[in-house]
Image (cartoon, rainbow, N blue to C red; front, side, top):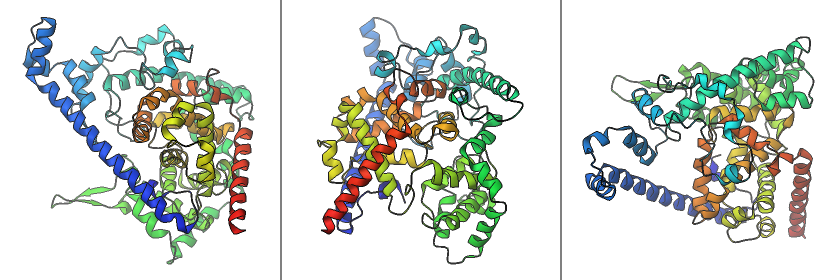
Length: 512
């Protein structure tokens, strides 16, 4: 089920109206995308115009060497900012550009989470980015000689279409020190507990929020999520589920799973399955890639384990991401844990009723905590009117995807990992609300200034991809100045129960 096929009204008589609304939104987004690209291209062409340079030169009474400027750092930085976006954009000159771009911004020590003008960071928090690390950490900041690899350690391409190379280098060097501190802290924590995993407590929670070391991450996830216990209590069960699925020629989900294999992280080094033929054409061959075959096995086994869910499109991203850290069987039991224990009931079933309830709760929180944002996204309706008519704002097509994928492909990889650390170790599903509301809060002024809900949609689709500073972002999520930091699972449960009961009551009223 694709993002635009999700809807929240179960009556068959409303299907045509829902499809019409979705088609309208799609067309508006397409028109907006075209308009945006044209504007970007015009700005790009303007930068290349010598006439534009002459105007600047005359205005400031400074002579400009046009040919030199076109090859200078200033042009490289600005032109990259103005180029039309393509999700498959690759910058062949990334290595050669690094030194010049980095030198230009070497004085900007800390990359902002969204931008330096973020009203939430500048006005509503007293803690600045620079206070999160000491001056002695400057010893690692040598951007002029640092060469950024094309891919990160997980096999994903660097988000150079969203973040300047200099900012990526700056963050990577600073985060290296943070990861060293994580490793030392966790080693000490385990040593003080007789080399055993400590029980869940506030102290462990503080360690988790500061990040789990890469070497320990898989074991920590398995231990504290409960997946390790499920695996130990069910020896051989995964193999049995997989055997049943492989032998069942009538498995209704097998074709859908097979079709999605090559669509799962196609740009990732470990999932790439494209083969270049002699005739110059490219063929997708999922069977040739070990990771895609593991992905297929886990999804097939899960379709047998949970027939009420079977398979829906977001599951392939969850499984694929976990396979970068866990083995096949561990990934299966982590998926079972996510669906059964972390998410509420019916989140992934065919009715999508659980997803509907979650988005209703989220929209209520937006309505209460950020009325200015609601005014822009609420289609000029009160929240309770939308809830009563079961017509949530179109923006929930996007935010629902945030929840179903646990922010995969929404936020940068390291930021996703830090969120998963918190979700799997004691915090649970509430973290998804805290993260979503923080993203909205960080972009509150941008959304309020947007022309309409379509512009707001694009803001929330693009701006999260720039949140590379995972350490700063997590601190912002749980900052005392952020009112969503105090959100509890009990608060969310009470709102879920409210909307479930209201929905049930409406069904009964329709029957009567």
